[in-house]
Length: 164
Image (spheres, rainbow, N blue to C red):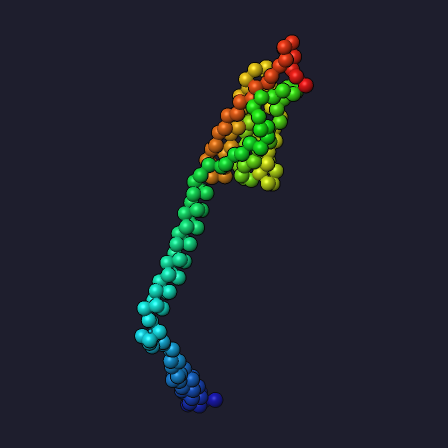
């Protein structure tokens, strides 16, 4: 092959390539909704209903957000379920039963107590004669702490024996 033929073939190929890449593609028209809502749909009553719906959604969202913040920043709640009385007449120990948050850390008399999946804990506290104080400390998942001190009185009979 000579140089002239190669040049002609190359020119044809380049013209075909340029023609391929030089094609004009159709522009896709963007759909725009520039139509405004007719004023007949925006009656004063419709505007009032729309405003009430938007205000209700805003109030519900704000209320839920406030409730979540309150729950996050408040210390865990502790409820002592048992014993109901502070005077103990039987035995030399009191069985403390209580309820708190599931993810809280409970310490009674400087001893770690574990709770059930429902948040119920139980602890047997030994009593001595007279007034006994028990400190229950609960630290929530948010790091807030609740401390409760309960007082229990162990009653004895006239012979200074523990009543059974």
